[in-house]
Amino acid sequence: MNFINHKIKVLAFAALSSGIFLACAQTKTAAVSKPATETSKSGKVVPTNLKWSERMMLSEMHRFPQAWMLDFSKSPKWTYPSAIVLDGAEKLYAKTGKKEYYNYISDFGKDLIKEDGTILTYDLDKYNIDMLNSGNVLLYLYEKEKKEKYLKALQTLRLQIDGQPRTKEGSFWHKKIYPYQVWLDGLYMGMPFYTHYTKDFVKGADAQKAYDDIVFQFESVQKNMLDKKTGLLYHGWDESKEQAWANKETGLSPNFWGRAMGWYGMAMVDVLDYLPKDHPGRAKLISYIKSYADAIIKVQDKKSGLWYQILDKPLEKGNYEEATASAMFVYTIIKSVNESYLPKSYKAAAKKGYDGIIKNLITVDENGVVNLNKCCAVAGLGGKPYRDGSYEYYVNEEIRSNDGKGTGPFILASLEFEK
Image (cartoon, rainbow, N blue to C red; front, side, top):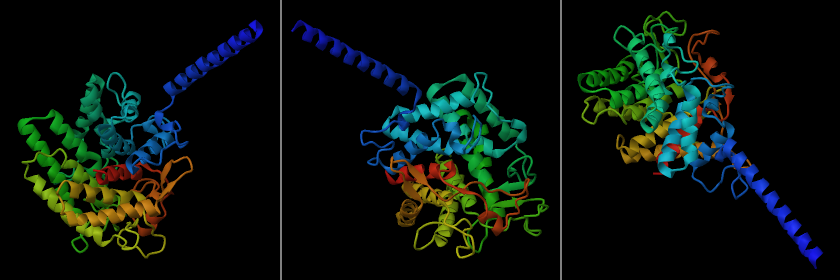
């Protein structure tokens, strides 16, 4: 009996030891891996019983364990797509209180901003308006953590606005290397940051001057880039009319690119989050949203609810239903309805688009990870090799899955529908 008891004790100790070892190993693993990558009780990496906003966010965190990877970057780099997905993470953290969402945002700040406030890979002298967008993440982190390095980085980005080259009437050039050019993309890249920064840090006459300047950027685009016949806006405008892509009479690029219009819509609804309620420009922006929504609903595919890469040429060879623009349009319309910028009747078009994305563009892996397919990787005007703004150019740019320029707006749109 003594031998048996001794054997039982040995076995029990061995089991206990292995349990302690296993627990230590699990604790160590949990410390270095994101909760998003852990398998849930259902055996799925991303549980399928969650709402679409969380399912896509957790999928992005699984694909890109660090937020700087969201632009398919191989090393930490200051780019704009991360900020769109992290906007969704901010809202999900506020909604759910789940710390993994906050940590994902916070790690972005830790990785990209040095202790002296220097922004990794950022070059102020390039005056690239795209670079302002991730400033939105720093505004959030400074509000939460009050770290001096974030304030210094924010002040550097605000300096860019002061020096950003402008057209004769005062519209921001897209980049210093693209002289005299205004792109629709730039309104989203710069104006929500400019407005949010002003609200948080600027007072009195200086704030009023900034808000007036922000509203003017939209007025200028409406004046110079709107096609009165369709209500759509062209991707770019060259004040000098010198670019090969620019119409020699108007300076306009030749096509209505879906995502350019998507950026513009998101810019308007996000700026209104921070523009004072009593500013006269609010009514103007809301009127622009109404004409904008009417124009994009006219070119929405009646069957699928989606939008095409080139908005007004759905039947031309090579055109396709594109995910990033579709998600941006859905977000812009449903947020506008929720904020009462648009009548409730517009919700039907947003819902048709949202359902179309889920039915036609979303796939779910066996492990529960959600994919958004048919995203245009990138498109622009000019540069090297030269992008001529032609129909053929846009429809032949790379198409990929899970681009942050689509997954971010999809998360934001989902959150609006989940309210």
